[in-house]
Image 1 (cartoon, one colour):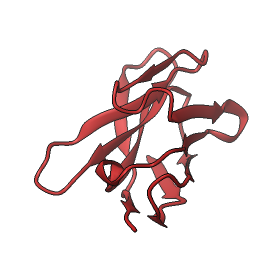
Image 2 (spheres, helix red, strand yellow):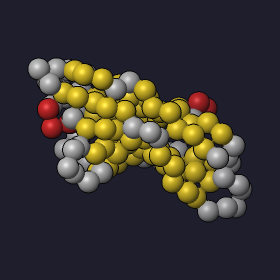
Image 3 (cartoon, helix red, strand yellow):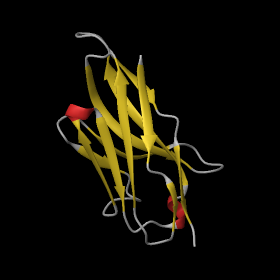
Image 4 (cartoon, one colour):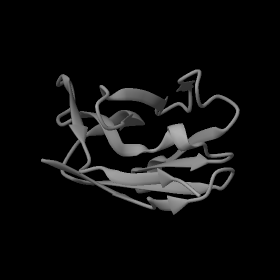
Length: 121
């Protein structure tokens, strides 16, 4: 099993910054892609940013230039540095990891429990 634990959410004023962290633990062979998704009230979950093991990144257009995703493969941890936050960034942010449990096996997606980010004055 794989467990993902997020931290770093909270309340911040517009224009402020927050950094989210997500660490993976458990027994597995390899973590391929890690990333962040978010879900605002009444909306579907959407991709925010992802990063492969080789550090290739992908961002939603709405966060490009403001958010930066990074990871530490040795610590099985992914980060999301969020700058110039806007009220529309308010959502529950979920960590995602695409994991290969056994060598030669297929990958599976795992999710964290979510952390609330609220941008408000």
